Amino acid sequence: MQLLPLTSSPLRRRILRGLEGLFAPFVRLNDQPAIEILSAEALLLFRKMSRVDQAHSLRVYRWLVQRGFQNQDLLVAALLHDCGKAAAKLSVWQRTLKVLLKGLSPNLWQTLAAPTPPASWRYPFFVLREHPRIGAEWAREAGCSDLACWLIAHHEETVSADHPHADLLLALEYADAAS
Image (tube, rainbow, N blue to C red; front, side, top):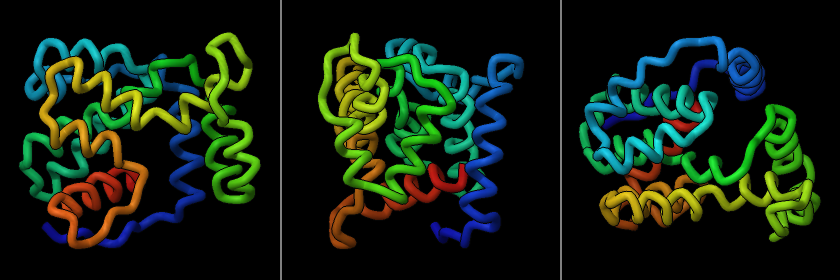
């Protein structure tokens, strides 16, 4: 499948996603794709996610489907790639701070997101950093395939172009960034 260039600026997409996050509790989601694709256990995992993350995951899924991607593991990963974020209650300001610090001060981001107990005020930042690993573990427990779990675990990483699943990971990353 061919990936086309993103048409809007990253800042514009971030602003739109922030606004969507604020209004997510009031918007009805069509989660039919999740119902059709995910096993009962994986669907419970999808529904554990915040409405913001469910809406985002459905956009990622639609982006891939609209471009002709049909690999079931990729589509499952699209729907569950952010499920690990459900390990903490995340606010829009925390998500925004993550994006800003990762871009402007990666060392400060790493310090803020260091391992910490769940009762700590910093725990949501740790979850934001570790959500791919957490989500992959949960997806594995929900019976998702090894490939779907691998895609979830690595969806924020770069892998070698000669990796056997690099094309699927690139598609997921591209859809994630576009959505």
